[in-house]
Amino acid sequence: MRRRFFVEQVRNGQAEISGEDAQHLTRVLRVEAGQHYEISDNHEVYLAEIETARKERVVFRTVAKLETVEPPVRMILCASLIKFDHFEWMIEKATEMGAERVIPVIAIRTEKGLEKAAGKRVERWRRLGVEASQQSRRARLPVIEQPLKWRQALSTNAAYRFALDENPGAPPFLSALPKFRAAGDTVALLTGPEGGWTDGERAEFSANGWTAVSLGTSILRAETAALAGLAVVSAAWQQLPADKLED
Image (tube, rainbow, N blue to C red):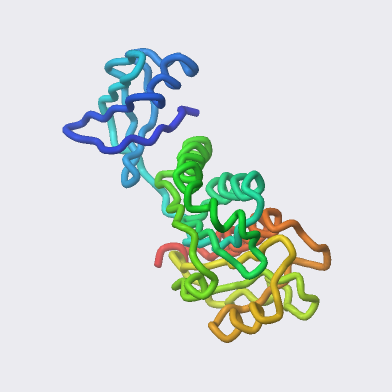
């Protein structure tokens, strides 16, 4: 299976990658003129041939536009900030799972040090999104947002909004899924910080139209819960009948 790379733009049938990214292609991947790869300009995907492969500049010539398959559901992960190594793992895996947007959330129990440093990490997180998108052969990159305050995050717009909650009173996620789903629905998942939700946060997300749901009796790490929740949503919409997928 061909590797896929993201480029800034395709213009007059050509695209290029420069700088450190080009160095990675030429020095690590050993790409050469004449080889074929797939490229995406974050809108369309093309089969492309390398015209030039130099140390800091790789030029592609498009050969054909490739078909792209739209995911059956648009997923937004509103993830409360956790320790950055775990948060970055979450971003990487959420990208592989097909999340369209990742919104870092400053919850009440978010550590103050994480809150202060998060804004400086966004560019790194976006880079991780690019790398994970290339690895998982996505057609489009995820949008990694700037961190949002708690109440701002609660206003995230989606057709369906679920808050993952370790509270034993929350209904099982599968039973809370809508019976009448359609291709292209937008689903937002809200995940808590290390230490879990406060009672006040539970009251607020419920008052703002978020449905509390449970992933089972085990207490999951925040990053594990996020990926499990995305997997449930993805699987549920993948199982739509053929006529629903054509809506």
